[in-house]
Each structure stands twice: as C-alpha cells, then as structure tokens.
Length: 214
Image (cartoon, rainbow, N blue to C red; front, side, top):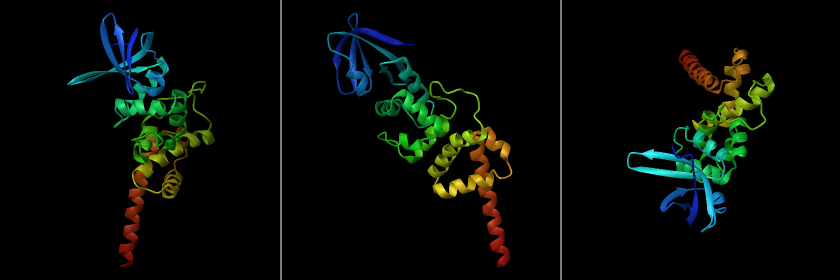
C-alpha cells in the first residue's frame, strides 16, 4: 500500500497533480482544496489511497491523514465510488462529514453534486457508528438523545424508499410502541427492519378489513 508521496510537484491540474519521485511521475487525484496547496517546482506531500481495479491503479491524494481516513470509510457505503467520495470531501471537511453522519443529517450530503436524497439516506444509514465527531464519546447516550441520532437516519432511509417524512415518522412511532428497548438501543438497521415489518403487517390487516366489509 502507498501511504503517502513526497517529492517535487511537477504539475498541478484541475483535478490531478503529478509528483516527481526521483524521476518517476506519480499522478494523483485530489480535491481543489488540496491541489491549491501545491506549488509547481516545490516539494509536496500527499497522503494517499490506492484504488485497484482490473484495468487500472488509481491514486487519490489528501492533505491530511484525517481526510484519507474519512475517504476510506465513505468507500464502504454501497454505491459510493472513489470519485463520489472525493466529491464529498471537496464540499465538506472531515469533521463536518462526521457530524452529518453521526446526527443523520442526510441533507448535508445532498449538497454534493451527484448525490440525491436516496444516496444521501443510504450514506447516513450505512455510516451510522462508523464516523463519530472528535470529542464525542462512543458510549450510548440517554434514550432521548439516542432517538435524536437514530430517528433521522431511519426516516431518511424510509423516504429514500418512497415514504413521505410524515408517514415514515408516524410508522416508526407506531412500530416501536411495543418495543421501548429497541428504541433505547438505537440500532438503526433493526429499527428500520421492525418498521418495515410493521408496515407490511398493517397493510395486510387493512386489506382484511376491506375484505370483511365486502
């Protein structure tokens, strides 16, 4: 794995830079903010992440190790590739991404070109617990605070599946009415599954009521 590059900056373009390593030019993709800190002819250092594909080896560069760490975590989200992960870092700094993921703020991710509500909802759902703001304890919060973290994530996931925010919120409350422990635990994936199961059962009950009236 190539952890970082240090050498003379041979070229700085709109989306890439070339670092001269003892006569070998390494092309690296980076955000505009990172590229703006490089000066042609001067020494530069970039932390890097190597993306291996069947037909290519592509380097992505970052000004800090923190940016690279967040980039690698973003790649764990289904449907998010390296170019989109880099676009997220071009719009938000690492701490802003941590806060958005931790609080379920999917709207922050829709500010990134190429990310709509559906992908944004998937990002906050899949990053839950993976990115925690610096200084935030990992221990579970009290029940009221825990709900403020998991509920927006579940609502975002449901709206990405087609429900309105109002219907999603109401369904979550009804589905968890008999499961207070699940609400306290704040397991986003399990709460989402429970709500979807409740919706399916409620739809079946509604159908039975219609049939009995007929």
